[in-house]
Structures are given as C-alpha cells and as structure tokens.
Figure (cartoon, rainbow, N blue to C red):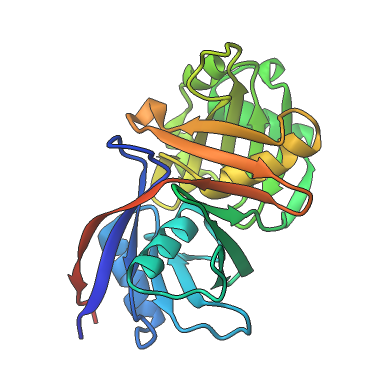
Length: 282
C-alpha cells in the first residue's frame, strides 16, 4: 500500500540547502522493521513516520529513525514533520501551536509567519564533563585541551556533549579525527562566538558523530536546543540569538533561538523539496 511522502528541508531560509528529513504519512500499519528498513534505505540522518496520537492533547504522533536505530527525539525531524503534517492538511488544536507526541514525551511546536519552533525538551543529562571526557573529546577534535573554554553534557536524547571554543573561526578551523569519531560513542557539539556586529550570525556550530552512519551533521536541532539551554542559563549567550551551522559542509543552516520565561524555542525555515508516494519495503 503506497503512502504519501515528503522530503522537507529544514533550517535553510532560502535557496541554499539546510538539512533534509524524509516523512512518511499514514504509517500506523507499518511494522518497526518496515520503518527501520525504509530509514536505512533513504540513508538520511533521520526518517520520520506520522501516526495517530495516543496521548491526550497531541495532534499527531511521530517515530524518528536513523539508518540504524530509533531515536526518542531529534530537532530538525520535529520541525520537518510538523511542516509535512500541516501541509498535508493537519489541523492543530491551537492557531499558533501544535503538539507532537514522541517517545520522549509531548513536544510543543510554535508557528510563525516564516518559521517553525520547537520547545526544547528537558535535558536528561546536564552536568559538567569530567577530565576523562575532556581529554577524549580534545583528542577526537584533534586540539589541545587548553583551547576548550567550557564543556558540559547537554543530552536531550541523542547523547550530546557541548564544547565552547574561543571563536567561530576556531570552530570552522577544526579538523577532527573523523574515523575515530565514527567509531566512538561520543556525539560532540562545538560552538564559538562571532566577534563582529557584521557577522552572518551570533555563533557558529558544528556537530560531530551526530547520527548513526554520519560523522558531521549539517544542521542539528537537538544540539542547538541543548547548547541554548546551557549557554543562556549561564549567561554566555543572550536570550535571543542566531546560530549558523553547516558552513563546513557547504550548507547554509540558520537556527533561531528565542528564550522566554517558560521555554527555550529553537526554530527555522522549513520547505518541502519532494512530494510523492512511497511503498515501504516488506
């Protein structure tokens, strides 16, 4: 049985590419194996499957798969799936917000005229990195540990450890040990601040070991959420800023962060690139 399918580009506010996610609609009758097999076949960092909600208050349910496993939460798939659901005629209970059911709980997605934003979920691991972790991360990034200004676990599901470097140029200049990162258990998010008011963004972000089968992710919602919760709380970043990500990969991801008294919101542009139908394997 064929199902509606969309491939949505996320976090790119124009013709330049951001990060794609594949979305399969009406997936309630697909098995876990069919979902995993199809996600492996698309070979994108994530593929999502839209299902009927099971929790009160949710507008729809989503399951998120990398080519190798299921994730409880991921950022750019959340926004891409919300975009696909709305475009297909989904009607949320609120004019300005919709509620997405995930394995990590209910995620609120806010709509604006030109972007979608998700409310950053609570961190499941939020603590300073110990010296062993700092040494390992420095080795994987192939830098002296003294260059690291701060490091903290900011895990909201995928397993992120956040690293602050002295500047955006330091982030762009990284030449990590990619083969070792691909074999390690670390998912490393690196951030550095621009120092000029004429800069294209406030910070530069890179994500390594970001997904099963990928060594660097183009634009990463979950990482930017964890970074924002950490940096804003400690006064390292303002309550509203823009993060650029994907530059080293030829992408043009722009992630907007806005904090209020209740939530940290992470968002950006979304647009459908491919529409059609699919017949998942099995």
